[in-house]
Image (tube, rainbow, N blue to C red):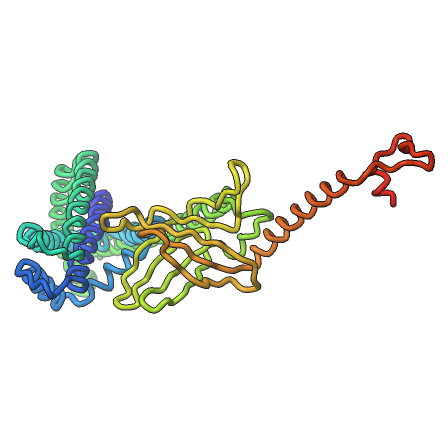
Amino acid sequence: LNAYRKHLSAELHKLRAHHDSLVLLLRSVRNDHNAEFNDPAVSAAIAAYAQYFDEHPYIEEAALEYAEEDAAARKERQLAMDADSDSQDSVSFDVCRPAISIYENERETLIGEIDMLRQVLDDLRAGYNKNYHDLAVKAAVVGLAEYEAASEKDLAEVREAAEAIVLDELVQQVREGLEKYSALEAESQEGGNAASDCTAGQDGEGDGSSCIAASGGAAQVKDIEGRLSDARSAYWDLQSEVSTLKNAVSNLRELLEKDLGPGDMYLPVDKECYSLDTGEYTYEVCLLDRATQISNKDGSRQSLGSFAEFGKLSDTAVDYSVHKYLQGTKCWNGPHRSLVASFECADEIQVLGVSEPEKCEYHAKMTGPFACDMQLDEQSAMADGASEQSTDDLPEMTDVAGKPESGKGAAAVHDEL
């Protein structure tokens, strides 16, 4: 049962992602399409989606939450869900058995809804007027093609996993096991009723030894079950502690390997987020982590990239006052979104402004105290260079006879003075 449940859980993670992707595509068509075109295919798609949304008003919120997660956070959440399911399933057969039914029902529901949403988008792709320059519709059509490629890959992985555990045989074993368990459960219940009817000694017949043996056996079984339950609880407590420690070690290892600037100056603000509301959008920069554009109209989020590197002064010199966030959400008929954040010296960390000098390439002007240290270092280096230049330009010192002092150059005498 555990093996089958784990397979269902992995498949459900993928199906939920597929469902959310389709919801977001149709949501974008409904919110952003150009109503002036009055395209019948677009109207039909919006009407079908609106009916589905009325029946499931929570779907968009769930889909948006999924879209906001980065891959690492999503993976961590899914692992936590699986660990929680594992701990519950191991408690008893009675706990694991209904979990299988719940997972199977959710899978069937998701497959049905995915097929419906995909059909709505497929009809839109086949019927929309291609002469209309409706960016929202064209983006949905492109998104559907990308979804189809990604979902085919996911389904191939599910099939491979099913083959690896010989899923058909496993499901058959689960079905047979459930039938046997139900039969044993019925027998146990009948035995319990028989035991309750035991009234040895009350009618004066028999010595009641069978009842005593039965009660003694029941007590022993109960004791064993209690100890097994305690052992399972202790095991899962330890497993949980081990998992927590592994995560902590992994986070520390990642932090140790991360370039946090000279003297680890970015350590106190690593992954701290700062934002600026520009009216139509709010721009959020999470230092050394990610950058995001958030619509103030509907709350939709576009990734402007994940932190990739610091700026470069040369092939060997790093500019720690410039942060580059790359490979964000792909623009329609354009590059992947990206953002470059440039810092200036100030007491507080702030986003002062965001511009878009090139299509889907953003620049954020920011301030922070760590930029002051870098500017002081640059000024000091420039001052040192100027000092060396000035001493080199001094005339050679001479004695009263007009001859250079023995063993001393101009710079050395200058230093002594």
